[in-house]
Amino acid sequence: MRAGRIAPFLVLAGATWMGGWFLQEGVAREESVYTQVRVFQEVVDYVSDQFVDDVPEEEVYQSAIDGLLGGLDDPYSSFIEARDYEDVRIRTEGDYGGVGLEVVNRDGRVTVVAPIPGTPGARAGIRPGDWFVEIDGTNVEEMDVNDAVELLRGPPGTSVDVRIGRPGAIESLPFRLERAVVQLKAVPFAERLEGDIGYVPLRIFQSTAQDELQAAVDSLRSEGIRGLILDLRGNPGGLLEEGIGVTELFVDEGAAVVETRGRGAGQSALFDAQRAPDFPGLPIVVLVDATSASAAEIVAGALQDHDRALLVGLTTYGKGSVQTLFGLSGGSILRLTTARWFTPVGRSIQKDDTMGPAGAGHAALALSGAFVRHGDDRERPEFRSMAGRPLLGGGGIVPDVIVLPDTLTVDETGAVRTLHSVGGAFSATLFDFAVDYIQRRNALREDFSLSSGEMASFQQALLDAGVPASDEVFQPAERYVRYHLEREIALQAFGDVGQ
Image (cartoon, rainbow, N blue to C red; front, side, top):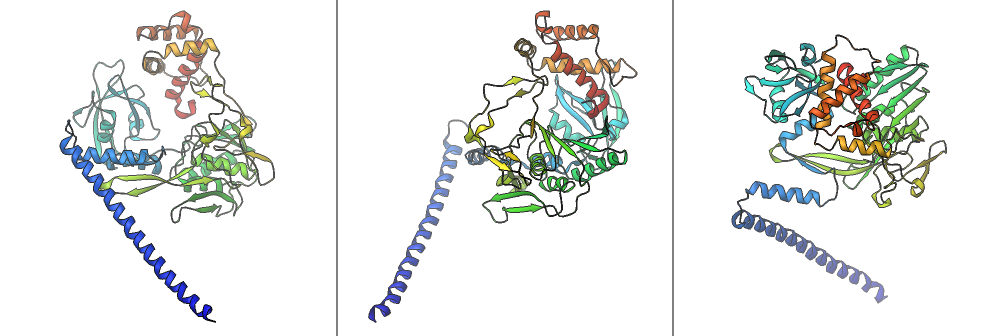
């Protein structure tokens, strides 16, 4: 009886003692945090005041931020300056006020690579190979390309006066361009191939990706296609909601699309298709490669898990993490990984580095110039699709049919490396030759092919540029050179369709 009455007292006393212990621990932790903050500030002060070289305090803080994020061992978490955030916004939202010209630095000049069709720059007749001399009266011939791009951007409806240099022109050419909202196309074109098969490349998951793809497939359906090739090769991803929206075009309402798993509040969620599919039953082949990433992997994984498409190509990149943008003081942004993606059957999209570099040592140089690795998949965990067929996990999306691109022989690889041994001279000569080739012709057939004489002219152009392109090098590399030179000409002449 007494024991029964004492027990509550002991529990209460124990709770009081434990509460005090928890309170003391909380106070100790708080004091520890403040101590660490004080130590950090002391280090900053000593470095700013006493270091042998003058280091601005803002650089010290920036280095601390870089060190903190670098210590996470996560390549996707980063600090974004307010100025750089505009570029991030453009890549995701897909529109801006500008003139629609893709430019690079070429031999110290801000050079036009390609005008975006339908934009002010394209309508004005600015061509690949043109370069900017002045923008609104400011000489830009030695200007950093990013600074020049800032001068070209502005509110839609405003004008910018530019002077353009052009190969063969004695003087620079004046243009007045009216800025407009430039919409970066997720679907640059769509084609009906032989056998009534539609082909649609989806380049990026920006804010109009679902709408553009739906319109493209609708158009092809009106032409009587019986199947679809959806090309996600080279697609770096983009907006999660657009990846879900694209998947909704093909899977049943209520079907799982992707699951996110994270530690923070609201970071774990299962996303389902919220509407009936627009293209139920349409046979689909999805093309993927090692540069298909992020939202592209969500779409490929979901269509494969639901047995809705056949995947062909190479294992995808394995970028299966979710980044959240947190606004900071001064307009800067913290881009932080907050969750990971999983396919409907539970495969992690994030590549598993603990499996080791499978396939390392079995790399070959593809005709495209990319390194191709196809590793041993026996270590990968096995999953089952909704219909029960085997699928491989372990990071990235493994295609149903592995198709390796054309690769070079040992002799070809050695010759190609020699051609690329002089900085960017090979690529620059390739670009310049293509510009000149197109300008010398009033029209170019889509099925053009370079003659042996034209290939010899390009070889001489390489030699003139200081590239070691003797017969002993050029002849073994000719297949590679022809592929890239004809591709560059086609891209400049026909745009994305030229690929």
